[in-house]
Amino acid sequence: MDAYLRRIGADRPQRADATALRDLQTRHLRTVPFENLSVHLGEDIVLAERPLVAKIVESGRGGFCYELNGAFAALLRELGFAVALLQARVYDDKGRLGIPYDHLALLVETVDGEGRDGGPWLVDVGFGDSFHHPLAFGDRDDQADPAGTFRIVAAEHGDLDLHRDGKPQYRIVAGRNELADFRAGAWWHRTSPDSPFTGSLVCSRLTDDGGRITLAGRKAVTTTASGERREEPLVDDAAVLAAYRDHFGLRLDRLPPDPRRTED
Image (cartoon, rainbow, N blue to C red):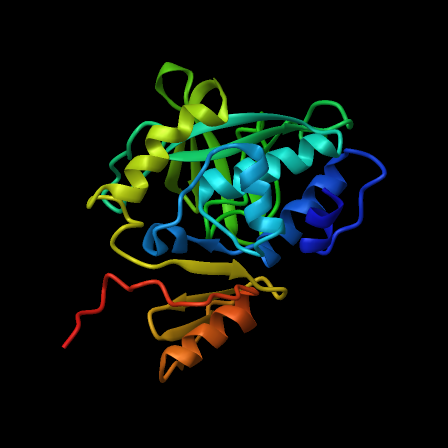
């Protein structure tokens, strides 16, 4: 876990409080990319703490929600935070909910106590472009974040919807879970033609200025916090491999096949 902290550029916090949690989440988002390269490289995804942490720390990689939040939960528990795994279902662009165990998020308790400033907290380092700072889980008012205005809204059957700027992002399903509960969802996302991850390559992370850097095909796309967008074309495989290394710290020995490209 000391190596994990070095990976995200963090010191071991003296207390498992809200300030430390916020710092850890932000650093994780800036250093460990949201990526689905394993899906296209034919690599196995094992939902157990040791291999998940090893992928991030020893292999210098990122992952998608099950991997990133699963590993981050292990780090937080080591540092004295109480962590529960939350099942969520992601809304698509047409307002339809995804499959059960579509997404893994975290509920984290700190030593501050309860309330808007003391938690418990909704934490997520595995959704890609979403909230930068932990959200007060019990708060039903608007919560300002560098990524927008978020609100946790009561839904049916005791579930909760997370809204971003008035639009539902995902539904948190009531109950607590173990990593093994998410295996079917991970398998579906790795294999189904309906999964957003089988049809595209994803590699993205938060930048230090609050924007994002994303590798999309043969383009490196930089978006500033104010929404300005700049594209850098990548002329060949060597340039793409260099972009993975320079922007995300990923040292790949081969490129994953891009499902969006067709061979001549």
